[in-house]
Image 1 (cartoon, one colour):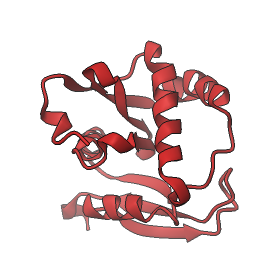
Image 2 (cartoon, rainbow, N blue to C red):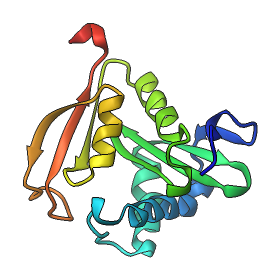
Image 3 (cartoon, rainbow, N blue to C red):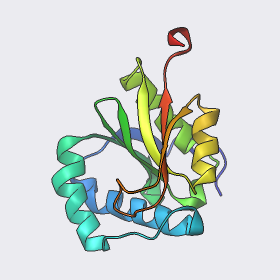
Length: 162
């Protein structure tokens, strides 16, 4: 683990570029795989994920990355109409402030509120989002997601809205 990665001169939070597509797909896949039992196994191959990032994520969503110099892209945030669609950080960089920096970007871009889905089994993500002011708004049996795994919708609103 690299402490305080976001504050280092070789680390930048920036908008994603089309040329980042493969690295974004790899970051998402590697992060999911390293989560082990917290996240259900992926239902798509890495080649399908790459195509999805190129055709959907980078086209329809506002994507931010954390570029950590020689390590490349170590964090990904995708936003769409008040939703955090994707937020992934590589395991070796967890706890370094990268996820918090990406949540800060999301809140800055959507200051009136945000929503997201996370798997019910992902206790680490649920604690992380709760730490950042998100609350549980809905729990489902997972019939609405590809993995068919129970999930939780969490919401954030500025303090003066509650």
